[in-house]
Picture 1 (cartoon, rainbow over the protein chains, first blue to last red):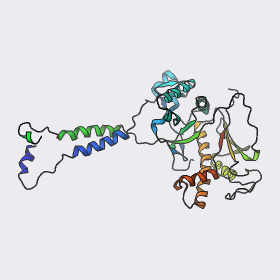
Picture 2: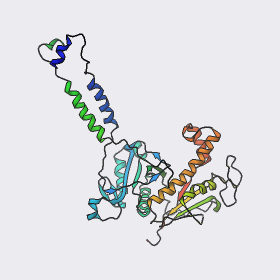
Picture 3: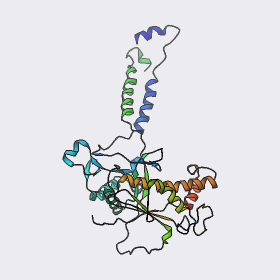
Picture 4: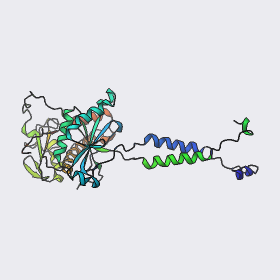
Length: 158
Length: 191
């Protein structure tokens, strides 16, 4: 800094970097606001199937995720390779979905609770049996908005 | 502040940028910008216990039955089929215009296929052993059939793609080709 001060006497003043923090803070706030932290650690392997007729999921705070797939590698020793369902941070049985939907609803106000969407993030290799069970439980829980999470496939599917 | 400049040296704010950069980089790294995409569907409510099966109003020709078995094979209106052909078949079915009441359809008016798009129902039934990937493929192909028909009509009628239509126009187009995909109640057969 002392170097700069000496120079101030000269004809060319140093470029002020005082606004640099402001610019950086602006960027910082932008990222802070747009960031969605990964809330759950995945306990299941999910490789989403691809589709072309996809829609974007808006309002991520109103989406509750249901993960279905094989347990991840390190967990396969204890849980086997049968597809399992994950709600929040633990494996859950299909019967627990109603409870889960209830919790998700209670966490929001009435208006938002109506707009809740369930997104099924299931591995492509999973059999439909478990998905059908999940759908049935969602219907029982009166939660009808459903989204099958897929990758966007720009090419036609083979 | 300026007056006290001599007495108390100004706090050096030079490192503020560094701190802010550090935070910025943290958020940059942790941010996931990927947008979740998927196929939107609405589940039907569970039929009441005492309610009898809905009377079979729909004429047989107005139902496009898609069955997927545990080996991921398709049976469409009692005919085996490949997924690749499903979209065209579904379009032909929906756009058939059997009773001639649909003025905007270009279908073949086949007596085997649907009366008009507002009556055409696509019925999808899968086995418990069907793979999820196949199920999504079938759902995708059926959705594609509807969206292609909608795209087509919106180009002809409003001269712009479906995505650029106003709310009212898109409602009208949706009304012309309502997306009726019904999924059969799951049946427990030998499982």
